[in-house]
Length: 160
Image (cartoon, rainbow, N blue to C red; front, side):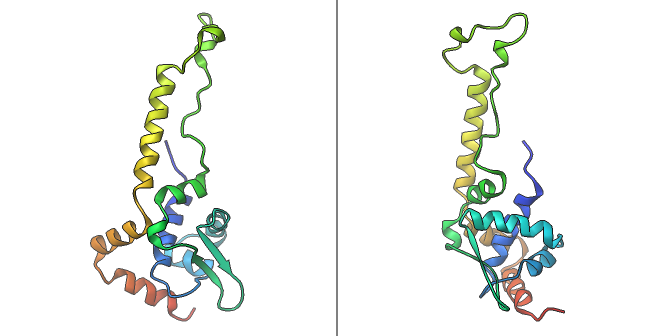
């Protein structure tokens, strides 16, 4: 399975917004993460459509989280960017080819579909257990407790 780079950008933005004391423009978030503003705007809009953040209009506008970081899971962000569909789609390959099994004989999912579905459920359960607040704490542990304060200061600093 391969997730798009949009998931990484979206997660970083959610963590960065926990350090902000107000709306942050998409261009500012893009600059912070070294990505294109138009690329990031698409993902921020997906997060807005999913109800994870919203856009504040006006001169002091930008994006803010709609819920506390403890209430937003990594799975919420992944599904906002990638969609909620399963990572595996069974095409009933066993019903094709010279030794095809009759659809009438396929009363249960095959072992491959069952295995992949179980793996998808486990992956989603693991992502559901990690919140943006958990990521924020881990970022502080990895890079020093002052990193989020530095991010907040940078986000508040005047645009060049």
